[in-house]
Length: 113
Length: 233
Ligand SMILES: Nc1nc2c(ncn2[C@@H]2O[C@H](COP(=O)(O)OP(=O)(O)OP(=O)(O)O)[C@@H](O)[C@H]2O)c(=O)[nH]1
Ligand SMILES: [Mg+2]
Ligand SMILES: [Zn+2]
Image (cartoon, rainbow over all chains, first blue to last red; front, side):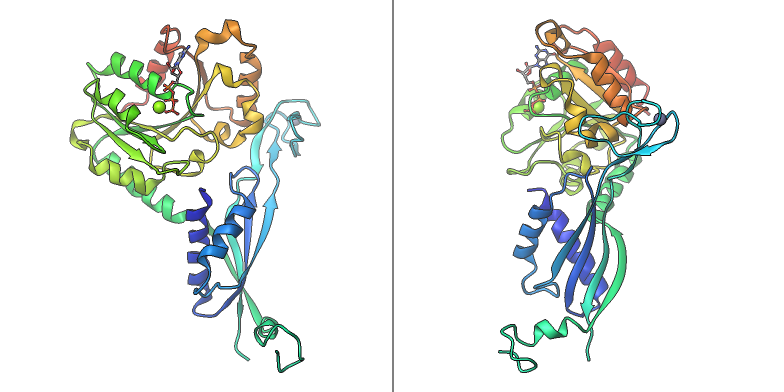
């Protein structure tokens, strides 16, 4: 449900940067810590893209896994399921250094011959 | 049929080859963030400190607000925005205390966003308020993604929900300024492991204190009031 305003944002940003050219693809980067679901974005995109520059454009999702930086020894690691322990020193958790990304990275537009 | 190669796709499939990649690097939800910034400026101009309360449905947000209002109403001018998918139930409970309150119904929407709060601000007597509590829609997942323009974000977790929630909903515990464990009076009946919960929250977020209270018995409420009091401008 909450992907609708987000998808409108994707369309708005892509359209702004396309400068009037048909959009072929939109490249998104979404961290796993955000609550946004690829399928839901695709669902809303298919509803709102028709009759815009992005009609028929392909959405590419690059998901970014969560990574911690240990607060004790600065080792960077990926939490696995419910094991949040630093593999180097055993401390629990860490500063989140990846997984919060949430952006339009680039778009691909058609160019005239 | 396509003239170029006789395929079924028509000419457009071939035009796709003539394309150009444009770098964008633009954060999503910027429209919400812009509205949140305006709310923040608006609140600041009126000297109001705002708290965004987030939790699962039924964790005890409204009940804690009632206890907070009862304790602070004599010395602090409080206002409340109630967010729910439907009904005025929570707003009526707050209004019965004489506290200015605006109900937002999201009509099925799972979180408040900054434009909704903007409209609600215009329905409140801002000049007559020092503190604003925004009770978000009961949901541990998406509210935290939407900045409302609050000064502080508060997560509540009730004892019956279990101590493992940071594993399943890390985003909210990572992002808030304080975590309040509610319904502490139920501890004897459940296997909630407070130390484990505290360790998980601090694993994600080493600056948010974890407070424990029961709005029913009043146990621990003083710690919450002290945390709040340090943040009023
Ligand atoms: N035992 C006990 N029950 C509580 C406590 N605080 C709240 N409750 C009960 O929990 C239920 C839900 O409380 P609410 O305050 O309505 O919860 P909420 O988070 O506002 O719920 P929504 O607005 O629907 O998301 C009510 O029946 C409360 O009486 C508490 O400290 N102890
Ligand atoms: Mg409530
Ligand atoms: Zn370590």
